[in-house]
Amino acid sequence: MKFTLKLTDYLDQYKINKDNKSSHCPVCYDEELTGNIEDDVTHIIGCYKDQEIELRLLDHMNKTGEFPEIDEFWVDGIIQKIELEIIECTTKI
Image (tube, rainbow, N blue to C red; front, side, top):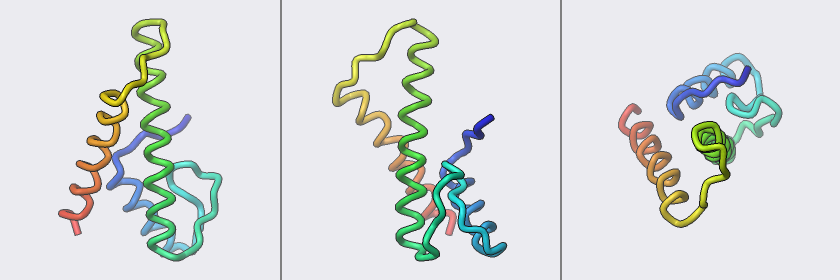
């Protein structure tokens, strides 16, 4: 089962993984990260975005039985959610 946490939780896990010399992405588990914090955080946010898209698609399909109409409002909703979580991460530091 795949966990679905908030972005801050994944970034906290990244810090723990890095301290424990583990280079696996806390979101996708597959990718090994580089150790470069900028590249790693960019990768984690990208995985988180992909996960959010997948979850929203599945949620809509489970509720309606149909594939959602993907327009700028649908995409903007995902972007706004992730932007707010990034802001939350920066205020947590």
